[in-house]
Length: 451
Image 1 (spheres, rainbow, N blue to C red):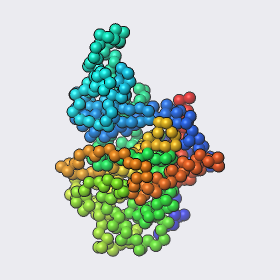
Image 2: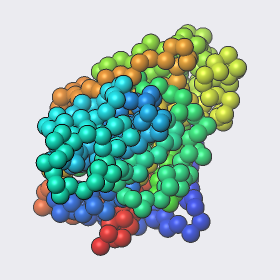
Image 3: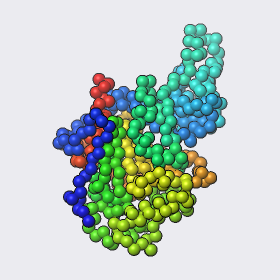
Image 4: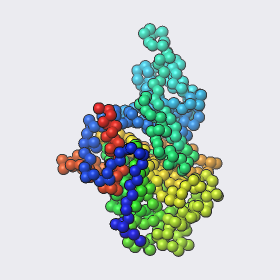
């Protein structure tokens, strides 16, 4: 067995001509970016108003007349599928007195959107259809100029993206190379089975940073050390986005006694398990998924270091019997490991062969010391057993998210409090935190363009 000191930590740099930071330049990040109201205001204009954002799943607007309201900062965006079957996005604002047009999160079978205040009405493609007492507005522009104000809108992987920037680059160009890396997992076929939000006592970037490295695993999540290699991760930094691959089903090199944990590993490598186990259990998974990858600890005779390979072989052998799973598309490592994707600026995907655990970090529009943390759990299920869309659940502060996420929640609140100390002179980063530095350099590039 190699010790962690014997293993070269790999940082892979992608996209020719793109600057990728030195893993540890010795220059700390300033803390003002996490606590300053002025920085947050500039960040809103320079980053959130310029980039693509995930608004909803395409399933939320699957049929003409279906709609979804997405909240980001001070804005509400109305995503609607028109009678012509085209998905569009609009500012969720009446053109008369600027009332919020739609107040519920989602709906089906809408023929139109009528303002609750004075009944100005638009159809589902954003065209103005009625102004009560139109004759009393002698100076009003013609109706064709009073349609709902539209945003850029695009779809990839079953996700609906929107952008407030009329000059934003095409969605697939912006996402490159993530679609080429994630398409093999068939994200567009996954069902959304859990939709949670909780407000955290931290800046959105503190929350994002927490999941952009594995350096914290040993101290924060010691219970995970027998089942993941937190040290030998492969980091890839791209033009805007970054990724890493975390080996699952093999102990961390920090674990000394690797023989006695084989049973724990074998039982843990159940593809139906998710980190989020404290609230809203996901629906029962088809038995064929469990059969595809689970290793029976009672009959397992290998060591802890053999479990990952045993699970890979189990899944490979079952790839023809579970056609709704993408096993045939994936290499052996992808059958077991966590492919973690950071989609700039504020979304992260934990991608597995059977499911995706998506985290989104939305800024609080009035307080840079708080954010909204969204958790979506998506899973492959047989088409005939596809569940209905789950309701959105707004969890109370301190709600149970399961052991690992509870540990993260405790950290981020404490970090945010410490950021406001007069002793806080910066944020120092290791090689294992290269993705954090890459993210912040990308953020700074957007900030610089807006000056």
